[in-house]
Amino acid sequence: MPYSLLVRHCGQLLSLAGGPTSQPLAGAAMRQWQVITDGYVACEQGRIVAVGPMAELDEGQVTPETQIVEAQGRVVMPGLVECHTHLVFGGNRAAEFQRKLQGESYLDILASGGGILSTVRATRAASDAQLLDNALHHLAGFRRYGITTLEAKTGYGLDAETELRLLQAARLAGAQQPVRVISTFLGAHVPGPEYGGRPAEYLEMLAAEVLPRLNPEEVPFVDIFCEQGAFSVAESRRYLAQAQTLGFGLKIHAEQLHDLGGCEMAAELGAISVDHCDYLTPAAAARIAALTSGRTVAVLLPLVPLFLRQEQYAPGRAFIDVGLPVAISTDFNPGSCPSKNLWLALSVACLKMGLTPYEALAAVTLNAAWAIGQQHECGSLEPGKRADILVLDVPTAEEIPYWLGENPVRTVIIGGEVQTD
Ligand code: NIG
Ligand code: FE
Image 1 (tube, protein in one colour):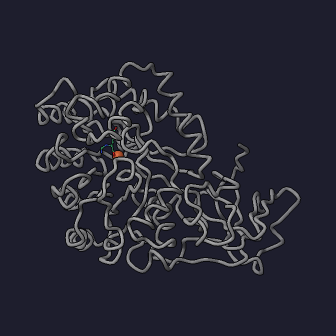
Image 2 (cartoon, helix red, strand yellow; image 1 turned 30 degrees about the vertical axis):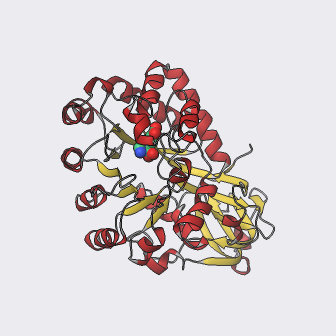
Image 3 (cartoon, helix red, strand yellow; image 1 turned 90 degrees about the vertical axis):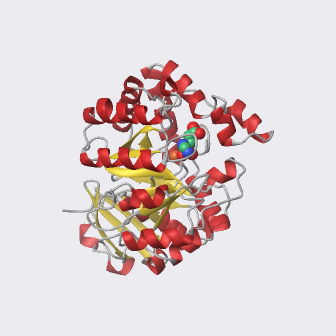
């Protein structure tokens, strides 16, 4: 079959290929993946069918019907995978930003009935149509940053009905535009306002009344916020174990503000990812890497400490050195990161967490795909994967984190379709 799409003359083709296929990139493999100079990517029916140097291009497959994208010596790489967002919510927390600037902490604001709970009020008050509109607006923004697959958590409903509405909004948003949406159930974000002071009862309600109504094929992951003011390690363990029995993959928000041991507990249960990790020690990271044989990914969220005015950033350099696979995400949400700029997160991971540019690029592509179980579909440019491809306005990979805060994306291709806006 002739090629339907050909991206050619890619100055540096960051294939992300060449590492182990049975687990996420870890240690030196995070920076030693394959770069092809003057390369091409060929696609058919939305999938990649060939990748290589221009000298090896099979010209016989290039016909007048083949759509050609001329990269003209620029960097070409896989579409970004955004593996941790709170996509669907009502309202915003700009007023709270002022309180933060005046010195109030994230947990103080939550304890006073604000923070997550204020977004819960705005979300419950929003109509289905408003929630869907908001999600579509944010997905369009993500797409312009070159995000082609995105994980979307619930967590601003905190009652059975609204949490199910949020899942429905994420599902419809995924179906109505090209960015692929993978849903995670985070009903266990904080105890619902009706359950103040009774977190265990709230979790029992979720486990009895909501989880059995979800299909793990449509909502593959269950997540929980393990932190002071949210859920304890013991509560989180019990709930995650219940979710596992029902067939869900596990995720956790842990070690964001304190070192409680949530990441290690979730890794023991076989969590696919442990997220935040700002207070996770290198020793605990080494234990997690050993215990899970490098299968659990630490999802680092560098824009969160920045936005919360926190000095403590996850020691990403040490995590990589002890063999823990690392991914990077924005954590897009109205409270701790209202930014969709994953490129900025990548730069801040280099500046504040000690990642090299190549490691950071692996962390927003292939390892991010592993963190949401999508490694067979996306995250690298390899035959068989979806044709999710970016052409960037830079000539080398090193320049990507250097242009701080800029969006380097020139062309976004999703499932073989060149996006036009
Ligand atoms: O991942 N840490 C908990 N949850 C979100 C923030 C939610 C919010 O403040 O609205 C996070 O940072
Ligand atoms: Fe989060």
